[in-house]
Figure (cartoon, rainbow, N blue to C red):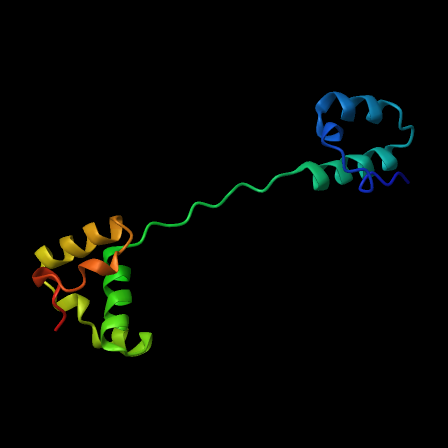
Amino acid sequence: MIKITEVKKPESCKPLYILQNLGSIKKDANKLDFIADTLKRCAVAPAKKPRQMSGYNCFVKIQIKKTGKPLKEVVKARTWSTLEPKQKKIWKSLALEGCPPRLWETEALKLK
């Protein structure tokens, strides 16, 4: 069996290098091992894009900081559902900005 995992060269991930070495391997089992080792070594996981914060998440985050209550109590209070649509739009726009704490005290965002 060929141990390819010990060789960590960038050129070993190029298709031409892989084809040349695959042709020199006689047994099919060794070819499969070579391919599996090469894929493990050369595969790159795609970067995950973080989800955008919602207006509700921004509201809850700031309410936790402002009131000092734990998350469970803030969610059970259901204060989000009592907000007017106009206020919810403001929270959504804040969430698009990354929920900046500097805007907590504005009149439109006063928490009940």
